[in-house]
Image 1 (cartoon, one colour):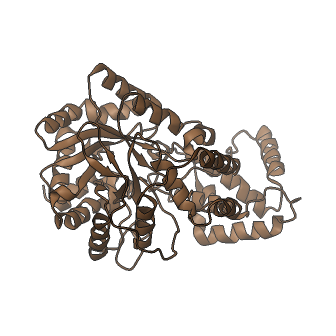
Image 2 (cartoon, one colour; image 1 turned 180 degrees about the vertical axis):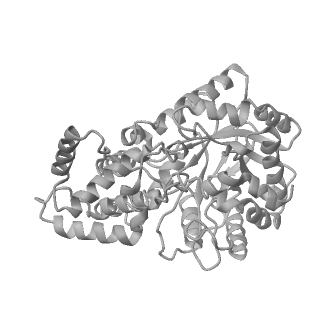
Image 3 (cartoon, one colour; image 1 turned 90 degrees about the horizontal axis):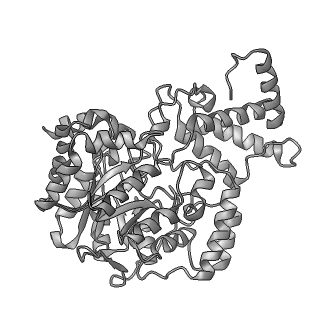
Length: 482
């Protein structure tokens, strides 16, 4: 199968997963000095002895021609020259773990990563990639095997150092059914175990999103000796450590995930240290507290230090589009300054403040897209969260800042999201929801935003609007619930 045919087969998975948010975005743009070349912190894989850099390079947001990343400009060509330069810089400064997927960058990440890394001795780097057979069209044994074989071709290697079952637990309320279809019923998991015996992959693990029953089941199999997991990729940051479930009742706190791995001495690979950039773009008042606490540290570096401090962490992934982000993250881990007990308590207070903001836990990964009705779900959530961050979300006319905030929200909303793609167009079909790694109840949240926007347009308090709508439905039950 040629590359064009393969990407067509990958189809819906690639279109829907322009990036799995191994780290996500942030808006750091200040110029950063060159970090030292010989101070990188390393962790040792207890099973293989691999000496892995604490900073892992996530290849999901590669730079594109014309600037930015493929997430913002999906049609633009990858800037291979810039990718090469940044990979060279990373290796020169001690980074040796590179994480990619067949689904990243519209299916182009592995190819670009392979070109950049192949210019270096194979002993200088570890490659992690994934079996990203999300679409049911790729669940067949032959199709799933071809994804793995194509990864080797694109990466220009004979073996993969770290191979992940991509996104286990996803697939709606019952993540186990999707897991069975992707890896068990087709015999793929056993086939991958055989490939490990043959040396075509060195470490077998999985990345976890969603249904905790799948996570627990796979670890139970590990305990029973049915399958052995060499590593597991989880979401860990100072907000999710204790508050993931509080923010979204369908999620699992990171302390549970991490501690379950530590019990079994399974190394943890960390994704989402910045929560899709949200922990690098905290409200100004919170950023000021962090700046006052440590004037020499950026807001983002607090999150990276936190994610890298636990001893069971093998590497922390960051999707770095810009050279300055790469430099800053290298500096944070060259060497790591672990979070102290006092700093941990401080970050817990920051987390509690962030929870109180009641933002929607969207990381702008675009897994929910495309919406069959054209709604721009991530853009709606991003604008809503941005307005919370900036203080432009006021629900009551009694608030003295109401009219300024109302204007800012509505004008910004129309600029960010075309009218025909806004929340009030959602019919709650639910197609998007099974694909969300954060397990957001997307139609429910869109309904809340639609209600809020309608209240702003009518110059009425949100509570009054809800009461009015409920009264109307008591007379006409066919009125849709918002």
